[in-house]
Figure 1: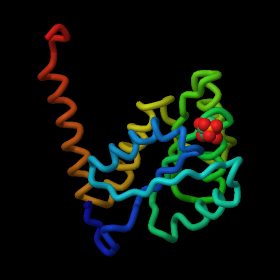
Figure 2 (figure 1 turned 45 degrees about the vertical axis):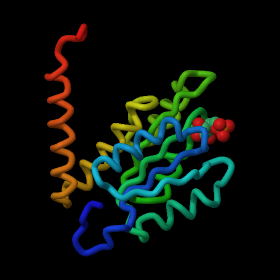
Figure 3 (figure 1 turned 45 degrees about the horizontal axis):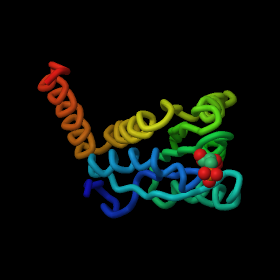
Figure 4 (figure 1 turned 120 degrees about the vertical axis):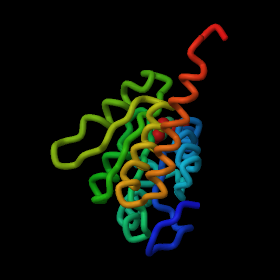
Length: 171
Ligand code: RP5
């Protein structure tokens, strides 16, 4: 996949984590977007509440394993992104999963309202947020990786062309 000078090309560079398997329907859009850009990534269920020790281990070890950005999705009392950010200096992008009870407003506020000093970059609720988290992660990697920068440029050009080529919504 994407070349990365000085490191193993098969080494995941982005960690996509989620609080439950039930979040996959949303978070798979982060994974497919990263794959489309040729970015090697790993996908894990890590629950802030059900597996707190795994959460701490994941956050502690991520940087040492070559992860450069973490995308974390969770719903309801969505503490996963914030707790990861508390434990790792890596950039953490949080994706609020659309909850059944409150339509994701609970997830959004849980993720966005971090105290000063521990940032989480918070995306939109649901699929758009998951997709954009992957694009933001790619932008971070692209700062030092020309192959990712090229893939990102191509993605945007294609997106623009698709809109321009389908300008009549009745067609
Ligand atoms: C959160 O609780 C998860 O991120 C998920 O969005 C929500 C519900 O989890 P399940 O009960 O479906 O496993 O921790």
